[in-house]
Amino acid sequence: MMHRLIFNQGDASESRIYYCAHYLADSLGLFAAEQLQVTFTTSASGGHTVQGGQVPAVLSREADLTLGGPMVVMKHYQQHGAELQCFCASVAANPWFLAAVQAQPDFQLSDLRGKRVLDVGNVGTATLTFRWLLSQHDLLDQVELIAGSGDQARDFAAVARGEADYALHAMHMLAPAIAAGQLSSISSLALLCGKVPWSAYIARTDVLTEKAAAFAAFSRAIEQALAWIATHDAETLAAQVQHCYPDYPLDALITGLAAYQQAHVFATSGLIPADEFNHFSQLLGAIGWLDPSQPLPYGALVTQAGAE
Image (cartoon, rainbow, N blue to C red; front, side, top):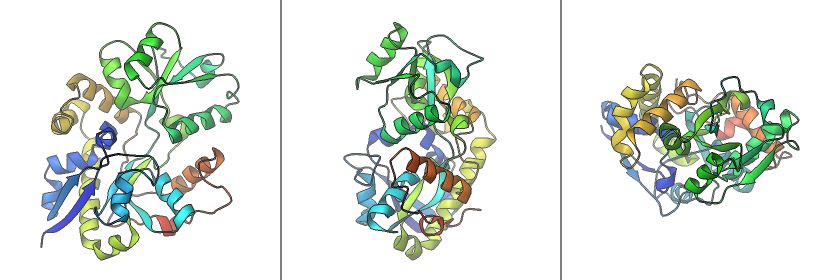
């Protein structure tokens, strides 16, 4: 029996290289081997909250699932209840990096004291998480965090001219500048922030029940894709998913995927551990993105749906 799922990816900006596991599963024929047909769709807009384009598509049943931060499920729970669940991990750590003009092989976070960091992405939870990280190291008042202009090339050029000391962004955006020699990767925030379920697949709780076999097949395919990522180099991985990023330079794709592999950003399995979920929810409460007075029940917001 062939199972079918509709996967809304949001808009083009949501198709980042650290979200490559489902593309790889499709490319390797892992969905097909599970007797699963996944139809990829998009929305007019992406988003980082429950108002984003792909989440309403799931809520309205136009799509069966999407991919995003469990912070979306947490926020939705505090506003509306347990209507959404995370069911399979994809990204298991913070995918943001610091970059600068010159390499700094012995970089320590304390090196940011007295420096200027250009927040190129201006992405809400990523910015707040970086502020949380600075506060954990008593650096919040010691670092000048500059909001990006909205023009990525202009911001990278500003760093190259010395108008800021570091650029802060996801490696997806930094990799082309790094591959071109304009910037150097300085540090991943993944290890600094600890393991957090940064991104996972999301569906309505009732749809997860109604289509349990299909979601279990999806999770098994994703787990196989994650295992493949862990055992192949970035060049081989890039060759498998390059067609999914047609406008992205191949050298940047290899650079970015290698950086994510080295920083252990990709999940190693589909499981979303309770301790990592709780750490993330506490972090998001501490930075004010969630209401820390409202508990977030792991059992109501996470289901493994076939992950092993």
